[in-house]
Length: 152
Length: 69
Image 1 (cartoon, one colour):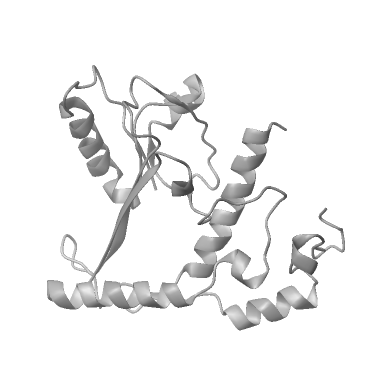
Image 2 (image 1 turned 60 degrees about the horizontal axis):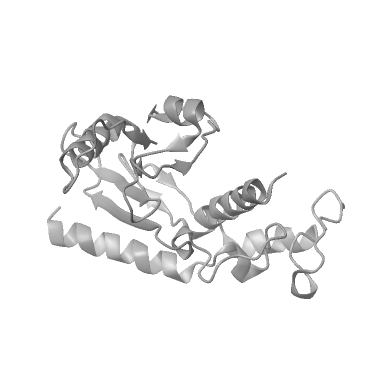
């Protein structure tokens, strides 16, 4: 499938998602606290989220080629230097089938010093590598080390 | 429970439900399909068990008949 066709399909999926309701839209009201303006984690000042969905090809699998159904989501907790200004954090394994990198440290130290990145199981090491690159080369002050935090 | 922990619990629960509701049908390799939740059918079941918020969110009854708050 061409890149144009796959991006069309990704666009169609986005439109279909926009037509579907969120919980509060249909009267499923969670808990007792009031949600933020958009009901999104980016309601919190400084929190940034980046996301990419990849949908390409169909039919039988050709390893290394496709079809592709995956994506990456990156969450940056604040705009400062996260390594120097860590944030409180904890992790909980729900069904523990996915692969993770960095959760041990989060639970041991109770804080987070790198962005959280989510992707498919097989790409966790690849994404962790990218987080290390980003952490060790970020200007103006590269981190002395970078423990990636990646999970499926 | 601290306010921070309560907020984390509630935000996570809502995020999971939003994710389930917003998800569209995906057809993967060899035509394997994972169907999106049928919203109308979901609403029918939620109404049956009085699990939808009533009266502007003041009272909601869950499936076991317990008042949530």
